[in-house]
Amino acid sequence: MKKLICILLSALMLLTSLAFVACKKAPAEPEAEAEATLKFGMGVYTNVSQATSANGDTNGKGQAAITVAAITVDADGKIVACQLDTADNTVQYTSAGKAIANDGFKTKYELGKSYNMVGFGGATKEWFEQADAFETVVAGKTLDEVKALVAAGDKGTDAVISAGCTIMVADFVKAIEKAFANLADSNATASSSLKLGIHTEQTTSDAAGDKNGYNQVETTVFAAAVDGEGKVLVAASDCVQVKFTFDAAGVSTFDTTKAVASKREAGKNYGMVAFGGAAKEWFEQADAFNALCVGKNATEITALMASDNYGTADVKAAGCTILVNGLVKAAAKIG
Image 1 (cartoon, rainbow, N blue to C red):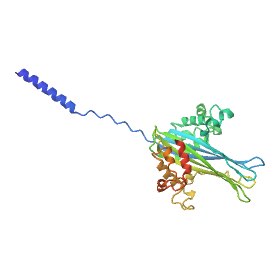
Image 2 (cartoon, rainbow, N blue to C red; image 1 turned 135 degrees about the vertical axis):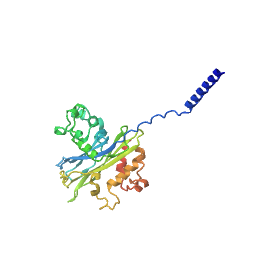
Image 3 (cartoon, rainbow, N blue to C red; image 1 turned 45 degrees about the vertical axis):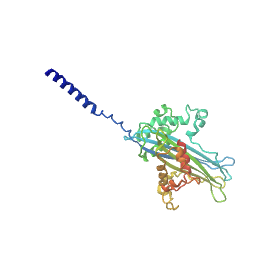
């Protein structure tokens, strides 16, 4: 009898133990560690390399190379990703003081193989391939380390050249330096993609009498970090106006000694508030536009422009009352 009681007690204890185990919650799986966010910045550097006078049948020329860099940077101040492009805009005017309109403008990256550094320049790689190589070299470097990549003649060091970038890199570095100066916290991560959109428009006026003519290029830049669905996580924009002036004989009156500042760099000195009666300066209105682009893809950003080239009601309500056609056309290229 005692033996039977012991067996029954043992069985009861076993069942109780099993019930206790069954009631315990399975241990929760550890949550995936959130990907670290990065700082994001864009820089624009303008190099006016030519402003010549017309002479007989030889047209005068104005040339402005606008180099843009977008970067993401980690907590140690090292570049995680970099995107580069240059809008090398050239315009002409005649010895009769007439401005010549271009068919259109493309950046060096957009020109791709048709830029023809290989076919006509004897290079082993096209411009866009060399820019890609430089982007690879600067990844993982601090600003000081990037600045140290410039060697004699504005070309890269041996490390840059051996990586496949044999072109001049000084303007790249100057744009990257400005991008570092504009760094801000963002939702971009190492898995985000950097995108650049650049759009150039031209306005012209012939010289007449004592009145100078001009051939102006206005280059609008939109940079963004996007997620896997192409939606903007953070955006930055800027615009550079270069107005090449000339007299009735096609003689250049453009001051090549004066540095060209972008609208964002001009800041409050751009004068939209003081002289234009606007409520906000250009850079503040552009920031409002950029904020509205977050969470949107290129197609959705395009829808922010109304038929009159101003923003939709939502854009105006956000504080952006300027013409947005340049911003939208640049942003459309990130898709």
